[in-house]
Amino acid sequence: MKKLLYLLILILLRFPSFCQSIPRSTPEAEGVSSLAIEKFIESFKKEKHELHSVMILRHGKVISEAWWSPYAPELKHSMYSVSKSWTSTAVGFAVSENKLKVSDKVVSFFPEYTDLPTNNFLKDLTVKDLLTMSVGHKTEPLRSVIVMQPDWIRGFLKTPIEYTPGTKFLYNTLATYMLSAIVQKVTGKSILTYLEPRLFKPLGISGVDWEYDAKGINTGGWGIRVKTEDMAKLGLTYLNGGKYHGKQVISNAWVKEATQKHIDQNPEASQAKKDSSDWLQGYGYQFWRCRNGSFRADGAYGQYIVMMPEQDAVVVITSESMDLQDDLNMIWQHLLPAFGPSKIPANPKANQSLTHFLKNRKLEPSPSTQVLGNENILSKRFALNKNPLEFTSFEINKTEKGLVAIIGTKDQKIHQIPLGLNEWLLSENLMIGPYSLRSVPAHLDAFAPFKVAGNYSWKDENTIEITIRYIESPHHWKITYQVHGDKLKLQAINSYAPKTIIELAGN
Image (cartoon, rainbow, N blue to C red; front, top):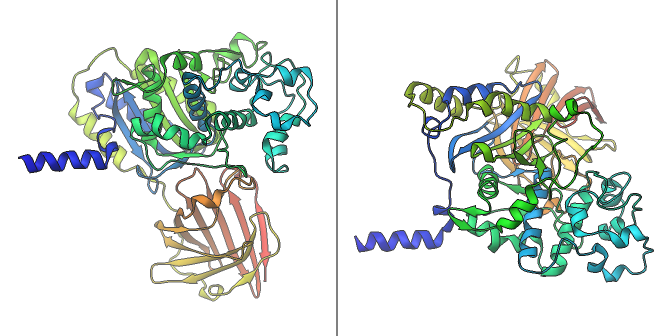
C-alpha cells in the first residue's frame, strides 16, 4: 500500500497536469439534453463550416467533446486572434504585480524611439487604449508594418493617429502586439515565458508555442497554438472570476475589468443591427461582449471560447469557418435553450447516441472515382515557375501505401508528404503550410516539424487531386495535378480563400 501511495505521489510530481484536467460529466447530470447537443453540432452546414473540435462545459465539467479526425485531442491548433485574450491575461498579471498601469502612456515604455516625431495624440496614447482597440488609427496598420518593416514597434509608433485615443473603435492587431512588447519590456520576459508559472502551470497547460518577431517578442495579437482543452481551461477560469479548481489564478478585479464593455464598436448602429450582431455588443480588454449576457475570445476562421455566466457554461470551438456570425447563431439558436436550471432525468439512450455520434466525427478524404489512373504521369520531377506558394519543384511517386508528393521549396529543401487513397496518411514535414499570415517574418519554422494528413484521388485518367491538411492549423491545400507530355499544370487553393485559384506550371 505504501509503495502504491509513493508511486502515485511520484506521478503527480512528475506530471502536475495529470490532476489538472477538467472533470467530466454527462449532459443530463448538468441540466442539458444530449439530443440538443447532437442537434447543435448537426446544425453547422458543411458548405460554410468545417468543425475541427467542440467542447462544451457546464457547472465546471466537460459534458461533451469531439474532434473531427484527423484532428485530435492531443494536437494543438492555431488560434489566430484568440491569442489576444491570452495577451490580455499577461497584461493583467503585470498590472496585479504593479509592473504597469492601464493608464500608463505607451511612449513611456520606449524611450529609445525619441527620434520619432510625436504629436499630442501619440503622447496621450495609453495601455488602456491598446487594450480596447481605440488607438485612433484611421486604418489598421498591421500588414503594412509587419510585412514591410523589420521593427514593428517603430512601425506602430510611426503610424499617424488621426482620432483622439480612447474615442473610436478600430480592430487593431498591431495594438495587441504592442501590449506584448510592453509586458516584455517591464518583465524582461516574453509573454509566453511570463505566463508559464502564472497561468499555464496552475491550469495544467503544457506544450504551448507562440509566434515571435525579430526582437523575440511574441506576436500578441495572433500566433498562439494550444489544445482545445487548454482553451476550455482559460474560459472556465474567466467564467469563475479568475479561479481554477478553487484557486485564485487571475485577479478577480482584472477578470471583471477585462470582460466588461469599455467601448462601442459602432455607436451609430441601429438597434435592429445590434440585436442581430455579436460584433456590436461592446469590446473589453481584448475580449468581445456577446449577446445573451456572454463574452468571448474570438479568432479568425472560427476559433472561439464563449463564456456564458448566466448559464454557467463555456463553449469552445476550433474550425475553419466562412461565416463567423453563423457560428455564434448556432450557439444561441440550438444550444442556449438547452441549458436547463438543474439536473434533468438521465436519458441513457440519448446519451449513448450522442457518445457514438461524437466518437465518429471525421473529415472525409476526397473519394477517388478510380483506384488507378495513368501511372505514366507519375515519377517525373518538374521544375516550377515562380509562384505565390514558393514551390520550386513538384513530383508525385508511387509507394506501397499510396502516393507521395515530393515538393521543393525556395529554401532549397525537399519535403515528402505521403498521400492515402480514400484515407488520410499522417506524417510530419518541415514545410510551412497554408496560412493567411504565411508571408510574415514571425519564425514559423521554429515550430517544425508540422503535422500533416495527406490524401489523393484520381479525378480522371490524367488528373490527380491532392489534399494536404495541416492538422495543427485550420487550413489545408487542395492541389490538382495534370501532366501533358513534359509540361506540368498545377492548380492550388488555400482553404481559407476557396474562390482564389493559384496557377502553377513547370516542365
